[in-house]
Image (cartoon, one colour):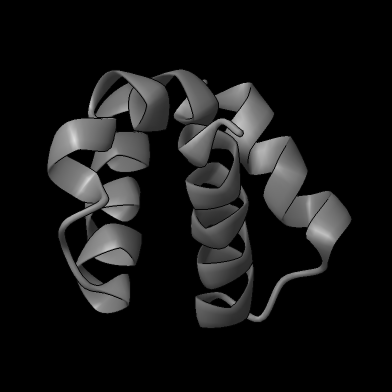
Length: 67
């Protein structure tokens, strides 16, 4: 079983809850900004951090992609 898939779902759910979004809206953000690719690339670092840190890190990543 691929642990990155479980972790990616965890990240999506955490982001969705932190931003009071629907699953569909959170999925759109993740797709629009290639957050799935980011999570996969940095899995080794991210999976050992806490939920709040992960959401904050994703926010920073998305913000950097918007500029």
